[in-house]
Length: 452
Image (cartoon, rainbow, N blue to C red; front, top):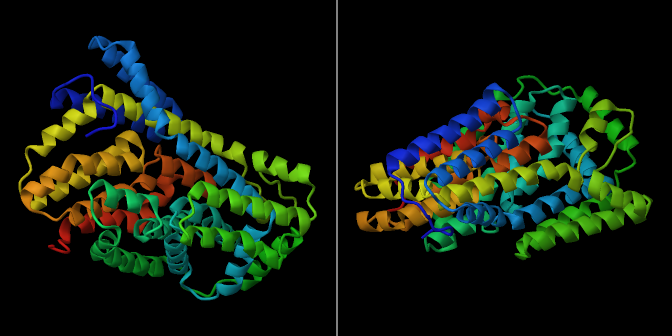
């Protein structure tokens, strides 16, 4: 059932105590001491090693669990490195500046936050990636909010809400495919069934963003100054759309994400070299160190100074630590014993749904990884749903409602750290405004949905 077989069989009370201790350590250091999440997660790893040693578990077994957990994220490591390259290359090719300039030209009403939510939802559905949507179009919207002196927390909440709506509903999304695959449900049947909770969550979120949007017309004079700053960068030209078109086309054709990001980045780099007359040595430097903007317009320079593989190393190191912690939680039997204990006490739909939601959210909080929250919860509850006669489509939908969209709300999670880094807004700042993510697990408890 589990990728990493447990070597210990602790009681559920003992497992719960250890897990609560880990959550307390991580939460205390991040929320109260305001440290980077790496430190408490490393402490959590040491606590689990000490626990395993006290239980006479050989260190080789502990080390194996640690390594296997970290190894499961190697694919994500390369993906993050390429996203760093993508952001830098999209800036020097003019793609992100052009997106910003176009968005500023289109924005003129009073529904600013609602428009951001809708546009990122469409983009996320088209691209099938919440992180790519946030790191590209989302970054452009953050720059626009800075230019208009609007709340960055609400802006980020709208971006995250829209991006994860798309990640949840897109047939191109890896989490959507994972959720349907792990519980053996047809992909499109899964997407159709998710509409029962996703559409209401979308409508409610849109209304809330309309209410929070500015009541008066946006000050276009300041936007004009911001566009002048973008023009001064010398990065606005028609060919800047090509990397975005390639990214969308490759995604529609279901080309692997790694190849899609690489081709889009290479295309952007070629455009920067030929159209932008940027020296090839400088382009390779941007790949690693990111782009340094010197337009003289402070907000534009702050927005465009980003990207590069080096900017992703913080995220990558956290991914490795978080997955290593997850591996130890499995090899010591802590997570398996809790899941087995819950499994035998569930009988009706209400209790099963609440338990599934709690487990998926708990996995996100404890491990910080959305793929593991989907995989582990799905594997643990398949038989429970079958025995209760509940369609597995309900399980697949709940995995996304409480697994996929919750990860960006956890400060030490993979998505949380990445989004805080690329958007420049702390997770706890945008969390109250990520309405779609907050509403989804609530609605999945109360909405029954399809019965067959």
